[in-house]
Image (cartoon, rainbow, N blue to C red; front, side, top):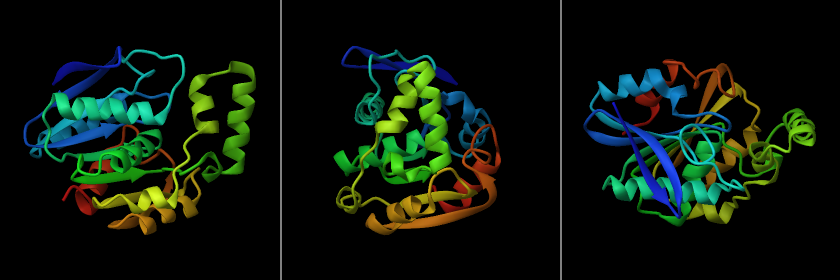
Length: 223
């Protein structure tokens, strides 16, 4: 396992590279870093994949910024793809990471070979009302830019989704904080999408520090 970095417009982006084989990018959610994937990095590396687990800007070992934007995060990922000379890697993105992956696929249709997203919303209204209320309460006291990001972004349209031509697998947990209608909209509006319903799980219970994610990826995706 090797720690590496790239630079996008003066912002240093840190990531882990592990294993050899077909490239797989892992993107974490809000207020997390690549370490939530420690278990599956090892599993994938031992299963013939070269894993790139990225710390998003403002998270982990990557540089902080004045204002977080999903579009900038997508550009950061594209910098890693170019620097590592990846050819159509697979990308798994959880929550904010899934939003980043969708925007990357919209702007760079040929960058990925496959996209897998989990718990991804198309707008702040795609989150449950109780979740948004808790975020607003937290932002009132903290003015956290990470909470601001989720309260004001993204704004992904069905028209944008229709331009995504790579295979897209959408995981939706039975007790997700993301509305099922948003997960369905992603799967139905991309050109080649499918929805996988994950029973008896919450937004992050099967993703963070959980080897169950590896089984789901190998069963339903990573073609």
